[in-house]
Amino acid sequence: MSKLTLIVGNKNYSSWSLRPYLALKQTGAEFAEVVIPLRQPDTAGRIAERTPAGRVPALQDGDLTIWDSLAIVEYLAERFPAARLWPDDREARAVARAVSAEMHSGFVALREAMPMNIRATRPPRPISDDVRVAIDRIKTLWRDTRRRFGSSGPFLFGAFTNADAMYAPVVTRFRTYGVALDGVEAAYADAVWSLPAMQEWITAASAEPWGLPSTDDI
Image 1 (cartoon, rainbow, N blue to C red):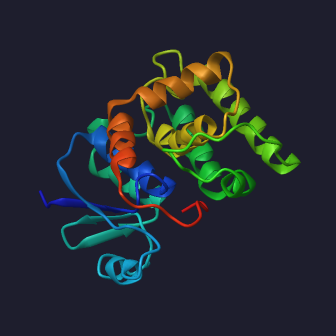
Image 2: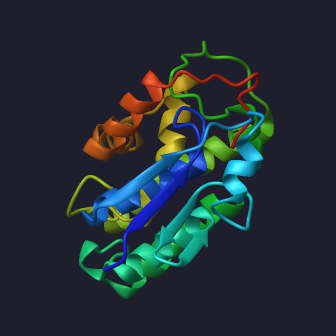
C-alpha cells in the first residue's frame, strides 16, 4: 500500500484542509502531514511543488495527487470502504452526498462574514440577512438530518461520515462568533467538537506561530 501524504494550510484558518483531515483520521490509515503556512512569500511555490491546482488541501497517494476537499473525501471513501465514510443505506447515502455538496458549493455569505479562526472568540455582532438565512439553513439541515438518519449515534447519520467532516468548520465558526445553538443542533456541534481528531486539530491550531493579516475564508 502506497504512503499517504495530506498537504494542508494553517490549521487555525484553513477550513477546507480540516475536512479531509477528519475523514482521513476516520480511516485509521497512517499518513504523513505537510503544513504550508498561507500568505507567505514562499506559499505559492511550496504548494505548486505538491499539487498542480496550486491550492490546499491535496492528498498524495503514491504517484497520485487528489485536490479539492470533496474529491479527497470521496476518494477516501472508495480507498477505505471499511471506514464507512458514507452511510450504508442508499437513501441516507444520497442525502449525505447532497448535504455535503451543498456545503461545498454554498453558504458563501457565511464564509465571508465568519472566516474560520479557531483561536479567536468574537463578541456577537449584527449579521446580514444573507448570513442569517445561511445559519438558519444549516440549523434546519442538522435537525432534519439527525431526525431522519441519526438515531444510531451522535452525528448527522448516526456514525461519523464525510458529511460531518464537511460541516466541522461550521462548528468552529459558530463557536468563534457566538452563534446560539439549542437542543439537537447544540448536541451535534458538541459531538463534532469532541471528536479526538477534531481536538488534535484544535490543539495544533492553537500552537501555530503564524497569523494572517486578515482571516478571509481559505
